[in-house]
Amino acid sequence: MSDPAQERPSPERVVFIDDEADVRRANRQSLELDGFTVETFGAAGPALAAIMADPPGLVVTDVRLPDLDGVALFARLRALDPDLPVILITGHGDIRMAVGAMRDGAYDFLAKPYPAESLMASARRALERRRLVLENRALRATLDAAVEEDPAFLGVSPEMVRLRGLVREVAGADVDVLVFGETGSGKEVVASALHRWSRRARRNFVAMNCGALPDSVVESELFGHEAGAFTGALKRRVGRIEHAQGGTLFLDEIESMPLNLQVKLLRVLQERAVEPLGTNEVRAIDMRVVAATKVDLGQAAAQGTFRDDLYHRLNVITIPIPPLRDRREDVMLLFQEFLRRAAARFGREAPPITPDVRDHLRRHDWPGNVRELGHFAERHALGLGRSETAPPGAGTAGTLAEQVDRFERGLIREELFMAGGDVRLAAESLGTPRKTLYDKIARHGLTPTDYR
Image 1 (cartoon, one colour):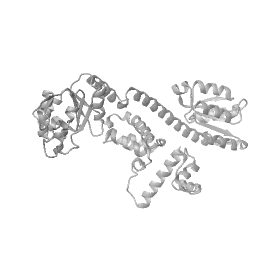
Image 2 (tube, one colour):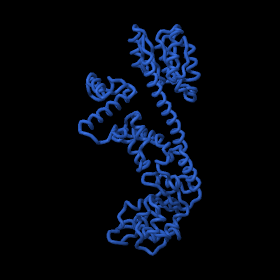
Image 3 (cartoon, rainbow, N blue to C red):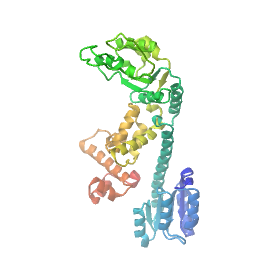
Image 4 (cartoon, one colour):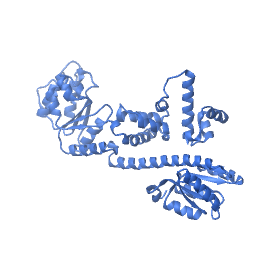
């Protein structure tokens, strides 16, 4: 839509168009009694000008208008904003035309005479959909701005703003850093940013997970060795420390490093020199060390599972990463970006974010943090996340028949939502006859408000 539509949407405002004054008056009264803000017009031209100046949340228009018929007006509105819901009011002779407009994206049609309750119900559903569309647009705009600023630190929460500022400030200081954060919170992302924003960015960023290697090979991986240094050492190997010359060495899960190697690492940090296995040669090293841990190293040092002197050597500057549960305003933003990336990687369109998914994103505590959220986005992109988004209380309790019913109801509801309430499309997607689906919708007590 034009810029005004994106900048100043009025999601609760209804524009009602009909050339009969009594019809306008009666429908305006009904809509306002139901809590809507209503603006009425007797012709398409003035209504279109008002809509372009201040986009509403919903347009309700008669098909028969003096200057431009409602279907042509709908086509104009669709060109301005394809997501603006339009409800058409028709006489019996215009129903076929209205059905055709619905195939082109009109939200609904009401055949005259219609009860006020039908208009109210359709308007409420349409405005709820409009609210979700505008919310997604705002998220998309925020996401684009965040990605442009720095894709590694997506988030608009105060915690993420502070983290970005701290990392940028520390990056230029060229001191060793300790990064503290829970599993999956993004410690390597922070370490990579510290390297990328530093004067060492043109040299190597060397990462090593201290907990992923057997104790027998950690020393060789870290310090390197000469040929013949031990059985099987057939040729010289440059260790991670030496490979990080001029750059950054990232030691993840440093709490897992064996105590005997912590002594050697402490010496490297103090003397900025390394002595590979199998040689007495000491080689000077110019590097920055970023260590990461998911445990309190101070407490580990007090318990004797981590060297106290190494802890104090590393604890010059500590960067804490907030867990995802403490910055919930970033969850939807991150999920949308992860979903976009996953869909692109899998070569498919990103599925819609259903109400159940939104509820799950809001209520889940994300103990696995950003990594867990990314994996959930991948499962959702593949259509495999339904069992995780069941509403509270819809667990495994109950008989087999009750569990099957709950699953079937949720599956039908989700498919109808993804099909925009179109039973024909949902039936095709589910591979079931339309009549069977109608029967199941009735049996499960599903109404349009459940999925539109």
